[in-house]
Length: 423
Ligand SMILES: [Zn+2]
Image 1 (cartoon, rainbow, N blue to C red):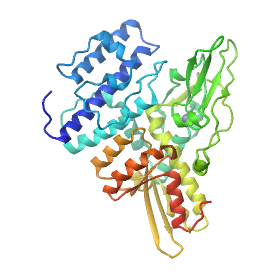
Image 2: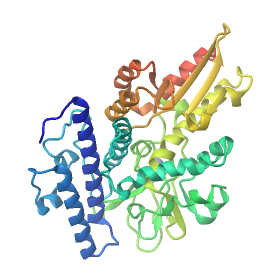
Image 3: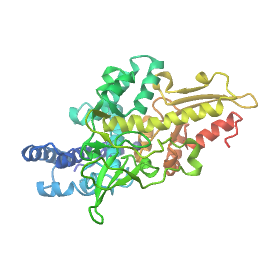
């Protein structure tokens, strides 16, 4: 390994290599377990990813094929070459795939979050050398194209369409057709993912309505299955169930996590359907691609909730609500713009980006590279369950004249500025 020229170079090559390696492992892991591949196709694909990985490791880091296959079941840390600088990451001691061969939420998020960072670094350094294939960029392209499709119909329609997308991550073709989304957006819906299928059925999350993941658990007698949303917070707040295997009929689910929100989060807690989901047939149903669900629907629910609650609370003191409490304003430069007047007459404007990152250090690094928020937001707001990210983000935000807060703390502060009691 050559000596890095500077700290930037070291960090860049670390993130670049990390992104490539993590991507390759995710693809290889999926190849290991994809049900529709012939043994020959499976072996060919694995050899292809093994080659990609050796290229990313660079010379002098051997990795025999057998060891490569073995490592696919271990934690991410074990997959990284010794030369890779790990200091910019939080914990890397989690597996890429779980027992069912489904990519874990942490690994999936880390892939996306480092991609965002990688894109910033690339723009800053104007790297001409393109190391990534079309396939590797597909998730990002999906997301970008999705916003372009939605933006094409004007600002007001954009808010309507994005809201529809957030609230409707799965459904039958007929149901989706009735929602009025642009035709191109329908293309982001796919058959129900195989990790969410039990025989011929699937179950929508009680919070986000995307298909929940199904995993078999060993237990007394026939064992049982757990059904839970892949977004951990939904699973922890109601979207987690179990059922006994059935032979004829669709199974009935039994809740195994409480769906009462924590008291301090109650005002802004996401609404749940409040009922046990019934089995839906796989046949005829479609669901958004995982990346679009994770990076549009999941944070979108928080953005919509914050918007709704602020409108309710400020309705009595603000003359023009649409003007004063705006969602995704200025072609989505940021997520919220809120303007209130204090009882003493002074005006306050809050511009906000909601960030739902699993890996806070990667988010902090992205802020550093952009020298603040790309769209110019002055507030960085995280969902309440990410409160432990606030100390780190506060330090980073302060450098760029920004502030970081949880959703509840932020909403409370806005209300206080407007002379409204949070209660
Ligand atoms: Zn969910």
